[in-house]
Image (cartoon, rainbow, N blue to C red):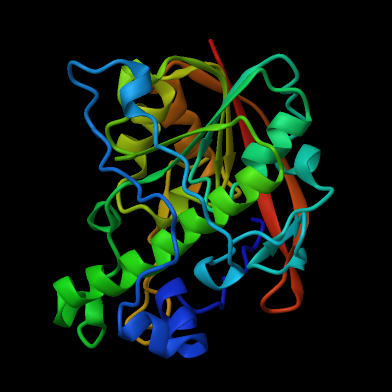
Amino acid sequence: MRRQSRCARKSDYERQNSRTPESLQTGASTALKEEQPRVNDTGEGAGRGSLLAQPRLVERLEDCYFYHTMDVPGFGLVRGHWDLRGRFDDYVGGVGVSGKTVLDVGAATGFLSFEAERHGASRVLSFDMSDVRQQAFVPFKDKLYYRDYESWAYHHNLIVEKWKNAYWLCHRLLGSKAEAYYGNIYALPPELGEFDVSIVGAVLEHLSDQVTALASIARLTRETLVLVTPLIHTEERVARFEPRADRPEHDFTWWTYSVGLYREILAILGFRIAKVGYSNYYHDYEGRFEERPTLVAVRD
């Protein structure tokens, strides 16, 4: 069985509070020239255009939080959690996106979206959550999420808004034409359209209910699912519950599924596993490489 390393980084909430406590704890507003309107998450009675997020004009790095290390025109190299530069093909398991429509699930800073465009995708939709309450953390009794949920939601929302700011800053400076939608991963509306390729990078392990999320994504996926997530390398249909009572810092990772379990779930959804590959990627904040599997599934 292939041994999976644990990600030892802090949660984004804890890391941001340790680095910029005043801006987060006071709730200072970011310097936006155009506020993000509330997006219809259900899509009921709405066309695609009314679902899409309106671009923000973001001009300062101080208003951003970078999940991906990026080369940003006018600012140079900006470091984030993961440096995937030059590794797009490896990360997506060699799946070609030229001339394809691509859904980037959990876009964060948008590196995968922008790389898909650079590799010739005909349409890219970047997805992220519209409300932090859509994300469940592990309810450790001494953590803010458990003790004071509304306070947690307030502070976590400040971080997520900075993620979105980083996306829109890069979007503008890179001249991107990618669209963005903010909603609920468990209920993606069909009005968004179908996509040839859906990329789900480092998302599933952070969800308490992977199956419902996969079903939501699969409904919009015409050809190929690319899942980048830790795996238990066995054909047994098993899952490992990752939280441990003595490690409350790991409050953002829920489950690791086996290859066999994904094979069964994907078959239920009308997909089959085409290949599973492994590559090492650089975790910039911790200065080390970490192995991440890529599972490619195609529709039957």
